[in-house]
Length: 114
Image (cartoon, rainbow, N blue to C red; front, side, top):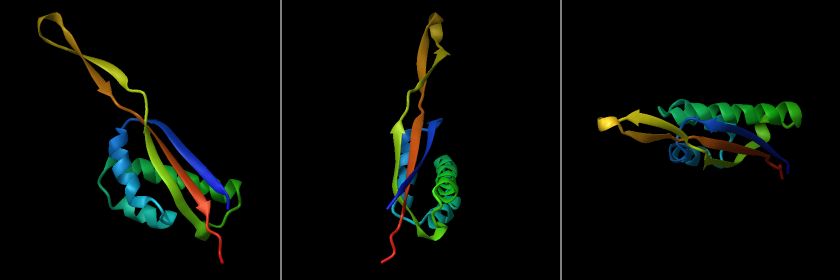
């Protein structure tokens, strides 16, 4: 059983928002996962859809795996480093705005036929 990985780093969306979408597609066939993601309104669904398509392309072209035998084994989102922005406040002060980022990883495996 071989594994194929695709990653998207520094995505401008919070990791907690991505984790909600990741739980919906875990342990599913990639084509079934893409069908689910197309119906979701979240921004994270579009990002995850691109990463799954990339992982499928890696498996098919680089590792010569069959498209029908692929399965999503792991999907997870990790916290990335936040971008610091400043907002002007009263009396010459400022406050920090943290723009969160995340790293999204998808692992595909080749299902063994028995």
